[in-house]
Image 1 (spheres, rainbow, N blue to C red):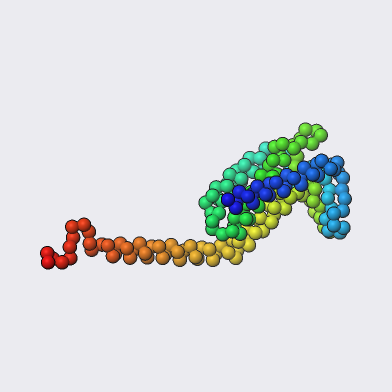
Image 2: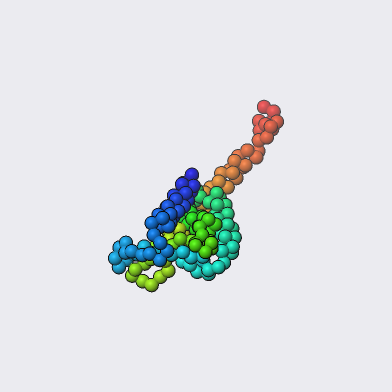
Length: 189
């Protein structure tokens, strides 16, 4: 359930912020949100994250659908493994869905399908991006932290639990091996 609500929250934040930008600004408009740190600059791109590889919309849609399906499968199988893993993959999933919604349903004046971007770092020359891209990036960093620092501990704990379960099963098998229905150890006494 956590997975669903986190993913839905990411998609809603992404789509709401993009809608506000599209309704309140013209493409190319810009203003300083935090001087020297971040500007809000409305741009549209037909590429992947941060506007890379324009004019490859169908490739991105196919890759996005496959990635989304893979993440849904992964979350169904491993969501109870650790909360950081669940949050990380949910962030990436929600961001992927958010950008795919744009690729499918948002068009520019020329009728090309585009993604709405608006977050522009002011302290470094970098691509303009959106909330979905931010969630994907943060989710990827969280996933890296999980894999490096937490997953080895989770694996160790799961291995110990499995060994305990196997030991318990072996003990039960040994304990019940000598007596079966009709057997009696009292030799007729």
